[in-house]
Image: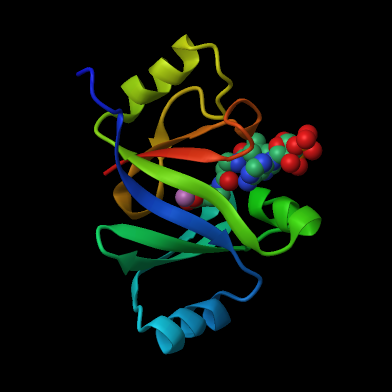
Length: 137
Ligand code: CMX
Ligand code: CO
């Protein structure tokens, strides 16, 4: 790995919403942003809509099950910013670097994300209160 930043770009800012269609329509009508990709991610119990903003996305998320992490989060905090996804060249090595620093992770190894990406989540408790997702395209 080079000495430069492991994070090459902001991949997405994820926003938890109760009504995905209403949120999509809000972004379309208010800011003229269209949906580029929509997907049900069974493993995480969410449906997402990805709206492109320059080279990054807004990831609107809504829970599809009560045991989804996003459902649990919304019960406590309501709607709002849920996590930040940073693009990385190599998810496995970025994750190892977090662990080597002694920080907590949620995924011990990278796993499939939406739209064919490989992802790993870093625990908010040792990331200054923000849930961080490492995204390899
Ligand atoms: N951002 C910041 N802090 C968060 C958080 C979030 N999104 N979610 C939970 N936390 C905090 C809680 O506030 C809580 O802190 P306190 O102990 O101080 O109260 C602590 O983390 C534990 O929270 P919890 O409610 O007990 O929730 P769990 O431990 O059951 O789960 C987490 C928390 C982060 C491990 C879980 O949400 C998770 O695994 N997330 C990763 C997967 C995910 O979010 N998938 C959906 C998105 C899919 C996608 O992007 O494609
Ligand atoms: Co995400």
